[in-house]
Image (cartoon, rainbow, N blue to C red; front, side, top):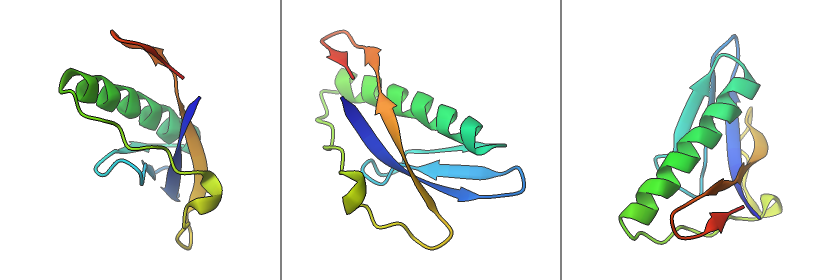
Length: 89
């Protein structure tokens, strides 16, 4: 199972999630749950595009190896869906 680490930041109905292993992958939401759901969706789209363009994915970093900046929270996002070539997750 692939689980990418995610850093959550924000408050007051504005939360952001970044996936440090995949530069440029980020999502927003009014709640932490919404931001994580949006990040999962963005991650799925990223993987589909990477597969289409024959781009190799970066390995997922173990959570205990991720540096968490102050006022950020660490979570993980599970990558699960069916692609044209293989099942991921």
